[in-house]
Length: 236
Length: 236
DNA sequence: TACCAGCGTTACAGATTCGTAAAGATTTCG
DNA sequence: CGAAATCTTTACGAATCTGTAACGCTGGTA
Image (cartoon, rainbow over all chains, first blue to last red; front, side, top):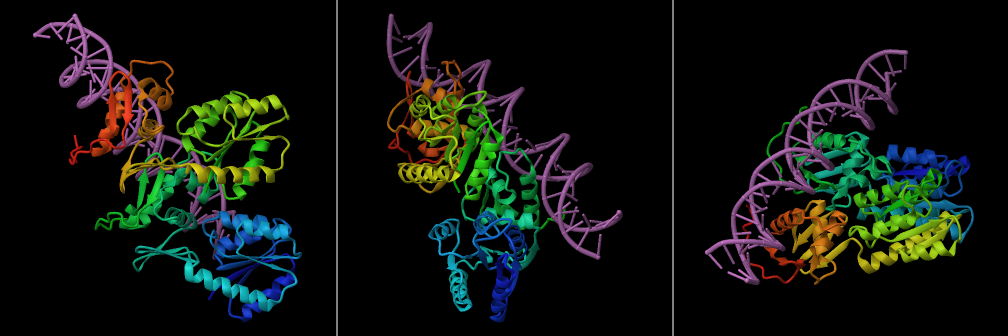
């Protein structure tokens, strides 16, 4: 069942929406400000986020940007809520990546319908929380990877790294890009962290580790059709 | 994910701009003076540079000239920042090749809009990071070359050399010019470095190596329609 | 033919970049 | 708090890249 994250600072509204959605069979997570929202979203990988615009700590716009910046939540649909019918905010909201937009007061029924509609759309197209590439099958909810029915569990960093390597598919990813996406670094640090994690990832992927190709003085390239040797030694 | 290089000696301003742009989904690199700026720019090939005019080490004007001198950064858009609304500086800035200009204090929103505008403009027109000539297809971001769907990977030096040979198309390039563009040499030294790299490049291009023609006592000419023999032996 | 300037080719040492293991730092959780 | 898991840093070796020197080849000239 789909998981929905509701972010609003007013408890009344939060629980009202939550009750309604829970009643329709969704799993509901909640957060009361932008900071919390990001944290919960990263932890639970919701299929959709309902995000209030006016909040303490970190408002909806900022939270939306944050969500869009993290590879785990980059494509999660977001519905924005606002108290006013302010066109400025509406535009800003859509600019930073919200998928839909509603002005308070709104009927719960309408919200529910929009959620249905968006989930139908994104589930059909992207699979939202699942990514499939060749024999690889990533499940964002459980940070799990299957390679043709063999379970592999990764840490969150490893998972983010793999995800960042895979999407968009077929393009080499620069070291700096990866550091930016996975770790949030902005400067050219001369750290070996990336290399270390690449190594662990390759090890955990076993013979499919070869799918992560290195492009010297650029970065790495995920190649789903890499030559796969028939050995199985990955017990370091 | 466009990459933007921010160059300013004041850390506060630098990080303020960086945060804003990172929040909008750009990848951000930073440098605190002109020398560093050139170094980082060469290393990361940003899509745009925000350059402060007043800096230690090497000011904005000098840095701008440096950027325009290197083939990798020659066409990278530059937005200049200055503390005063000094018309002199504005003129100088535009003369040395800046694309836009803003006076401090400025709103981050305006900066963001100008960046959007410039990126839209340059991305549409120049294709910015891709060069196509006959069967050749160079991707500046990833240092990748394709010759009619066959991948060829070059080192960064080889890539710069090939790029310098190709652009502008159809003109013979003098040895001195190439040394200047690729290596930054200013004097016509008696080095054989250029010859060595030409050889390596020809070898990697396989049968298309013939596209690099020697113009005796002048330099080299890239000829996309060079006679291409049907052999494939380049494994010396 | 002999000579010479310009270019091609090869080999090699220093510089970069990457992979790897191990130790230290941090976070998580009972 | 303490232990385990995870992440980051450090150090060093391996692989690759790069500039230079040495020498061979070619075409032009007298």
